[in-house]
Length: 177
Image (tube, rainbow, N blue to C red):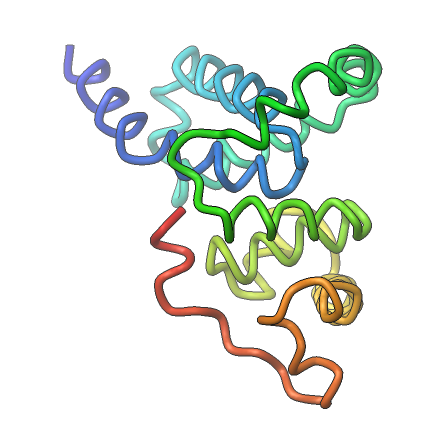
């Protein structure tokens, strides 16, 4: 019973945030919700191990991301994407800024998008992103730099990139998600 209560509290505290993060990484709300739900189902099956991890939410996010980008899911979701596009634009509890950011993120590479979301929206450090993605820190820095430059003309927060400055992450953004 303690396991169930522990998991329920973890789920309640993190589900919406992880869905928002995976949505920002994939650009597809329905796909993000499916992937995150599956990741939590897998976590529940091994909760005795997952809850002992230093950051169980990172495990959920990694599993959900891998599920969302699998080739099978991409093939299945491409057909339905046109029908879901209108519904994704009207996502409840997501601000116009969030939807604009997701639209801009869709226009950069998946690796850059993932690094940008993990750094600026989740609030992870470069070394934490490297550990979560299995990439060298230099690669993460490169994805961040190139992603910021690609986003600069699309999102005003990254406009400072063109001037050679690094934009500071917005204080409340990671908590908002």
